[in-house]
Length: 155
Image (cartoon, rainbow, N blue to C red; front, side):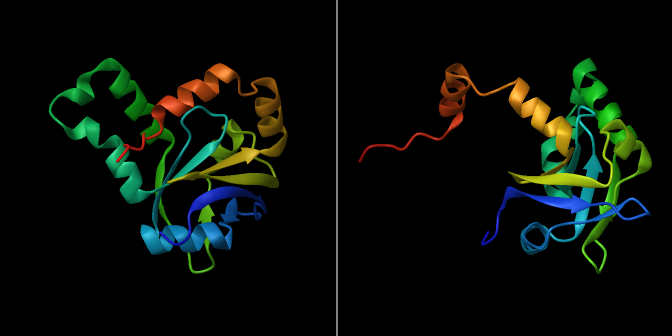
């Protein structure tokens, strides 16, 4: 993918609850995944915007066998699908964030849209600042992150 979903941009909601996806993010999403999205909230702290194909891959585990009957998987699917909505980016690059999602995540006029590689998150700027300042990364966090990164093989 030439463009990627990294970085952050300030954005504003219009009166209808729509928000324009920043052009860099919009072109990256449309180029790589198309215009179909799944919009939900996993924790009520923020709103997540997944390209539909990414969401389907992420949640595909629930369609394999009876895995969807496991209580934690079922609870997850109920939560994200109750709040979630399938949406298509409109011709002006906007998406609708439902009032219930905006209220839960305390999203008001001006927000921060953050790229997280394969999806976006919309945050209330003050809550994001408090979260990042209140839970700074530790050496242990960096160690755990380094273990998740692919290791280069020596030749």
